[in-house]
Length: 367
Ligand SMILES: *Cc1c(COP(=O)(O)O)cnc(C)c1O
Image 1: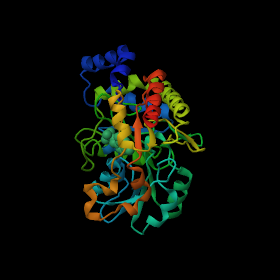
Image 2: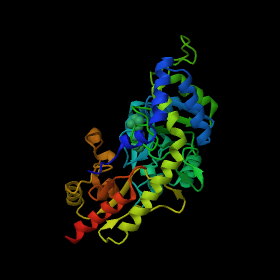
Image 3: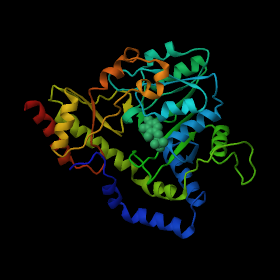
Image 4: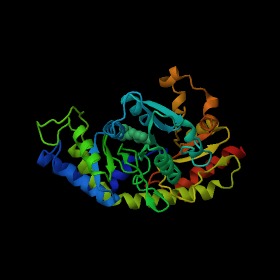
């Protein structure tokens, strides 16, 4: 069986580093706060090229924390994209604000920048584009719109660690960006973890404080906050993994190229396009395929696990039923929901497996 993700293989490949990191946390009992958390925050900020990294409990909280600390709340609207994981929109609601969904564009599955302006009202406070599957959203256009309408820009970078837009790393274009270190993400912890990055000193301090019960110094609560800290074990694991991320990203790209090559001759399949401006990090390799459900089942019978990101566009989820959205409001997301299929991609997936998966897809359409 070829699994959709294989976290075990990666662990085995860096077992010494990981085991050492875990045992040092145990030895020091630095479970909450402490050296590993500070070291990871500094190391990630430095390697990523941002002033501040604030490790938090997960990538969802990271978005919530930024929105709250930017003062977004009741009566406000925040624009985001129809095809994402629910974290992107539920955090807007958690703040008391209203998520406004914009459809995706046809080639790269990111927010359709031509449809953002029509969604802006006098209540709009921020835009949260998602660099979905590891492909950057069209940041120049988004930055311009945010400047024109005086809106905050928060990049949901959960799927796109180290991706680039015109040679500049995503996550460095807006007021802040958020990352997830969920185990299957390109940089993954061994449990829930995430972070906020920003070049804004005041915002960084507020986020750090809010995530730690409103205190920078113990018992000195300057405000009420939440408990959303990156824990010591996860920080130590992430710090041990950080030196490998560039090699892993390179391998993901290699695998994507191999898929492209094998799949390009199959008429029933559209392989992922990459914009001229983009350097894609392939968190997911998403194709569009004729008879998607039958293909998925066929691959499963041949020992190949696949997934769908996402089976239902956010606005059409039951969670948003009361908003009365219909498929025709989000024509592109709605059309693609029955065509998209995510194939296995992770640094440890051998190129021979990529060839086998591709050949099996070809076989399905010939048979
Ligand atoms: C994974 C993910 C998140 C949330 O991250 P968690 O760490 O699981 O809370 C947010 N947005 C997107 C687009 C994601 O893929």
